[in-house]
Image (cartoon, rainbow, N blue to C red; front, side, top):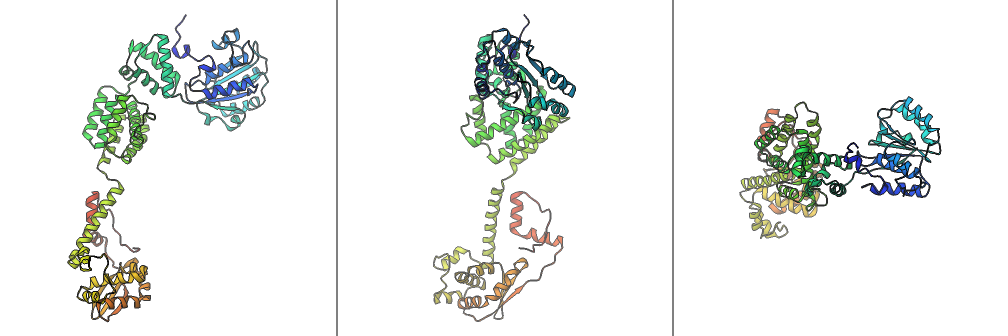
Amino acid sequence: MSYLVLARKWRPQVFEDLIGQEHISLTLKNAIIHGKVAHAYIFSGPRGVGKTTTARILAKALNCARGTTPEFCGKCPLCRAISDGSSMDVSEIDGASNTGVDNIRDLREKVRYAPSGGRYKVYIIDEAHMLSTSAFNALLKTLEEPPLHTVFVLATTEPKKIPPTVLSRCQHLPFRRISSQRIGERLKFISKAEGIKATVSAIEMIARVSDGSMRDSLTILEQASSFSEDIMASDIKDLLGITNIETLSKLTSAVIEGDRIGIINIISGLVNSGIDLKILTKDLLQFNRNLIIAKIAGDARDIIELSEEELSTVNRLRDKTTEEHMALILSELIKAESGVRSALYPRIALEMTLIRLSLLSHFRSINDALKVVQHAGLEVQKASEIERTGRTREDKKVENGGSSSPCLVNSSTSRHLNSLPVADIWNATLEKIGEINHPLSCKLRDCDIAFGDNELKITFNGGLSVHAESARENLPIIKEAFQHLSGKDVAIKVEIAKAEHLSKKDLRAKALKDPIVRETLEVLEGRIVDVMPINNR
């Protein structure tokens, strides 16, 4: 007898053998028990999860010599014929090679004939999404009202390509990816039965790289058994070209730390070893996904499917950076993956992506930058105040008896303020006005003042001119407060400054003289790209 590959030899033969599709098994078994089998089904899901296999099991349950039952014998001539693909009543049609209207017309002619041996004729159309629009339209009437002895099963990996008119005529049963844990358990059972020696780590790695497909995992296991008699995790890595997690850790660490020379050297070594850069990019993407999950979730053993050694590597690296930094790296790797896969020179595409990502190590988050700028602005403001008045706010607090705001009601305090500079008297005036009219006090804090010849001139610049009218309306309050604190009867005028027309060159020079602007440029390592006058400030 010719050799039978593991994927075919261990194909499920009964509902109980289906791994990870218990919801499908239960639905079909209940439909058979209660006599509610639909005339058409759509089985959708990823490759290798059991869609066509389930269709064959359904066909045996409908045609077994015992009767229509989910507990079919599997040994009668009808069941055996369906299992080995020789049954006249079960037809498997390749949708990719039978896409035309003529193929559907031929199918419609055959549907009319009664089953040759069983009770039902079952038509399994694999890759049904490959049928043309005309073929789907030709099939609609038959799908809606087929003969009573006919059941259709449309298997597809892309249900979105099935027209709504077809979906509405069928029961849709979505198959799921099989978890790595369930695949691993099945592989251990099959390995023991077949006498294949494989370590636990090797089986876990096969389960992970199979991406939820039982058929893929069995194919890899069989290939590995030919590669080595004692299958190790290193054998799987060599066989499939999987990048070592230590290499992924070093490469990611170089990106996080901005080590561009390290990135180039690591990529060069991998290329010289013959690694597929497309697989490397995919592995790097998955590693960084695990890294950010570990950073966010902490103990992520139930989320990240890694061995203890691999998990410890991830945990060591996660503390080197922030979640925001990791998110940016992962986002760019997702964009770069398709570019590397289709690039004429994938090495250059990957190197430039990682070098660009390494530059993020020199950047600060917006929040950090704003904190630094705010701190720098406060320092500059404090220095400017000392230069202007010769004292800090703390000095003024001491002069005011240790209070953060001066006592403005006491007459002795008024006599003390008489000897202070006009700027300090004005600040005290604003405090006094704030007790009576806080909005007015806030508006006056942004104006410029000038004192001379028993006249106090209040000037609003640019966009602040909107406050001038409010100041004019409240001149009595301003004058009373200033006169009480200064002891002088002065005239107060409110004016709007004329707009200052400066050239771009003069504006740039003026901006560069501003201490806050200089500090901001230094902290952010930035430069002035353009300048414009502020009119709505």
